[in-house]
Each structure stands twice: as C-alpha cells, then as structure tokens.
Length: 212
Image 1 (tube, rainbow, N blue to C red):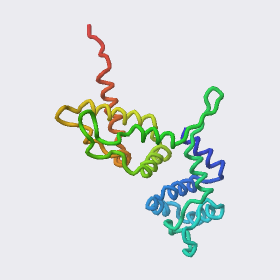
Image 2 (image 1 turned 180 degrees about the vertical axis):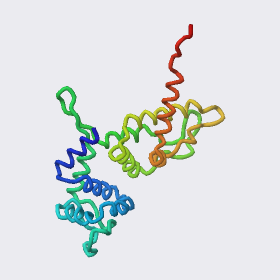
Image 3 (image 1 turned 90 degrees about the vertical axis):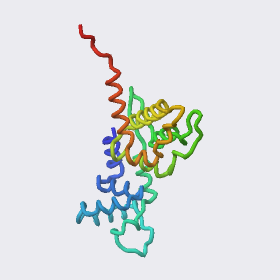
Image 4 (image 1 turned 60 degrees about the horizontal axis):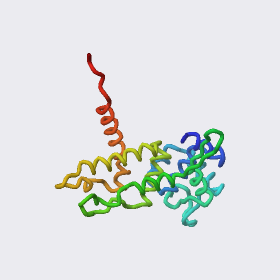
C-alpha cells in the first residue's frame, strides 16, 4: 500500500522519486541525511533543486545566500507542505467504499498508549517516559512512510512490552522503571525486539502434539 501511495503522490505533483525524497528530508529538517544524499545525485542535483525551486516546492530562508548546495538555507514551501500532507494520508478501497486514515491518527494512538511515566501499582512515578512529542512524531512518520514498518506491529509490540513489564514487577521492584522514554524507544526501534519475543512466546504456548 505504501508504494501505491507514493506513486499517487509522484503522479499527482509530477515529481521524481529523488525530488520527493529531498522534500521529505527538508520537511523533517534532516539536513545531514540530505547532505549525504547530494553526492548520489551527482550533476543532477542542481537540476533537481532548481526544478523544485522554480515550481515553488522549496524556498530559501535567506535569499542573499546564492545556490542550492547550502541545504540548511532551504525549506519546504506551502506547496511542498501540501505534498507532505498528502503523503501522510492513507487511502484504500474496501467493498466499493473509500477509507482514509492519516499518519496523525496512527501517531496519536501510539502516543496515547505509550506510558506517561514509570508509575505502576503501588509504585509512584520517578521519571517521565513521554518526551519530545514533535520529535517522536517525526520519527514515527519516518518509520511508517520511509522505512515501511507497520503501525499495527509497532502497537502490538508496545502493548506487549507494557504488559510484560507490569507482569514481571514484584513487591520489591518496579520493572517499569527500566522502560525507555518514547524518543529512545522509537530511535532504537525497540519494538523489533518485542515482536521477536512475541513470536517466541507464541511458539512456546502452542499446543504440542501428543506422542502415542
């Protein structure tokens, strides 16, 4: 579905894959990644950037600085933001009806589910677990749109980890105190570890065939 969505965006705005990637990197202010990507475009870089600038997808912070190689002086215009908005919307058809869901809906579900603190049962909170909401939103969007991870898998892993930590807490120790904050959890892709644990637990709990 993700591939189909990007193809729709490329066709609607008459953009190339390289141009869309540049817009994404500038939109999220991933300047280092953008600078690392420039050599891969070689001589096409100036052509791609001038095309985006001429068609009003990007603009300059400081118009006194000439040239497109100063990526930190580039930003996404309102038109470019509309491309990102379209990219953050999912559309699919089911039984002849059209359905829409946005990345914001996905992120909000994640954010509402993520523990606010390490407070659990009789233990009081000692630290906040939710941190840098805007940064987490960008990380989450990147995981879904650029890296192809599924929202459903991330949510399953998060819910499993929360249940596991609470289950393993004792009267002497609160395991929730070892829970990573939201920013670190997304940055390190901790959900992958707990997806694997879920698979192991599922295998262990499968009924064994009786040997007659």
